[in-house]
Length: 216
Image 1: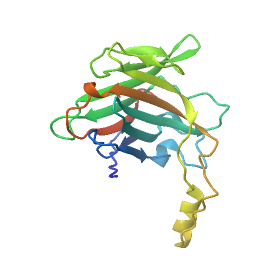
Image 2: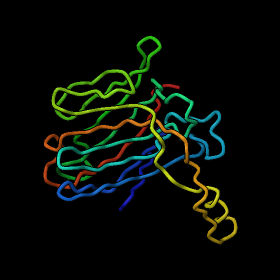
Image 3: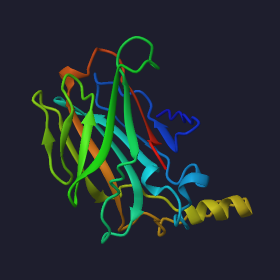
């Protein structure tokens, strides 16, 4: 897997996975937890930092029916805490499926809002459909078969950041498979299932995502 990092001014986080080939069976993940630390904090301290805009993971995979894209942010957090549904953060999933692989043919924009006290999601520019709006923690579907769900999920990442710090400090590999910073914690995810006919143009899909705070 090839991971390319894209960092731009005013974007708290941007993340790209390598190309996913829809002709075969392939799944890709890119991870970018707590980065950049000056904006999002660290695995030991997130108090006062922009946690909601911290994109942690980007997953892309497919089956014979759909291409699935999932972005995680605002985690890891305790299982008794609600999801991060910040109305002032714009999340964008960019898809390049024709021409130059850095062109953006499908910019899927995601924002959150509230209907009274209840959080909701708006997804703009889903392929071949108009904006989709509805509550979180529920499957939402466009009239052309795209399914979207936003909610809190068990964090799938597994890593030992203490081992990384110790390895850097001592020069000796110090990772332990008994330490997982993300075990038994949650992350907020948006998961999108797109019918292959709406996105597959016979060439690899390049997918990257970014977050931007609209106002402070």
